[in-house]
Image 1 (tube, helix red, strand yellow):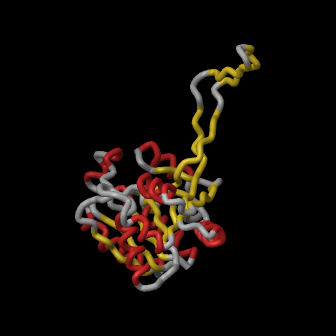
Image 2: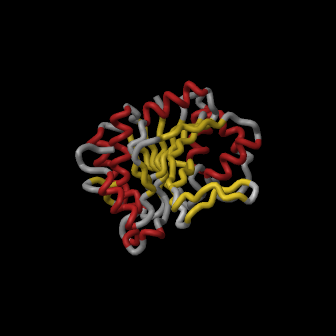
Image 3: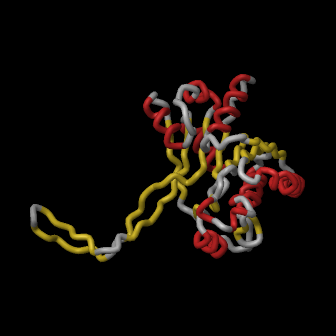
Amino acid sequence: MWTTLIVAGGFGTRLNPFTKIIPKPLMPVGDHSLLERHISALAKAGALDIYIAVHYCADLFGSIVEALASRYGVHIHLVLEPQPKGTFESALTLCQEFADRGENRPLMVMNGDIASDLDLVDFHRFHMASGADFSVAVNDYIYRVPYGVVESHESRMLGVKEKPAVPFPVLAGYYLMQPSISKLLGSAGSGELGVDKVLSSLLARGSHVSTYQHHGKWIDAGTIEDLHRASELFSERGMA
């Protein structure tokens, strides 16, 4: 099995003024918060060892996390980040601790503001079978071109596609990483350690990075409109 880190320390500025009171991972999607949906999915997958990196409104997480741990039968450890240092700073620290103890089970990193029905067990199975150092889940983001797109060849028009929908594979906010990459990323440079810097550093070193395609429900709940869409998409017939 794997250990999980949920990244929940962001300021959620796109959700102001609501996030001046409630941090984004505790915002509701239907009858359950984004954070509870993550923990429910992890419990169903049998991944019971969970870390949550917090910074903004960190004091609000204590009693809530304690209740969720009891409700779902999981072990939750809060990791306080005195200063936000990017998505993967705490992940790198955990990987280093695992490597120092000789542990080789992967760390799953999850963005705390994502609502998705991604199959965590299948993602883990894919990662292990691939032999990758680092795996990223990707989801197709559909961009609808607001104009008619012209098809031509050597100045001769072949046709027009009216406002076509074009899929782009985007990072879905779920990652699996082997503890051994802490040695590589330890020299990834100064400043915030975001996913862009992590991936650039690994690819530059020739590390094996694999992509796992998710075809199901997925929303980055970063705005009020996205939260409403997530509530509509994830009905209460079952937790994601």
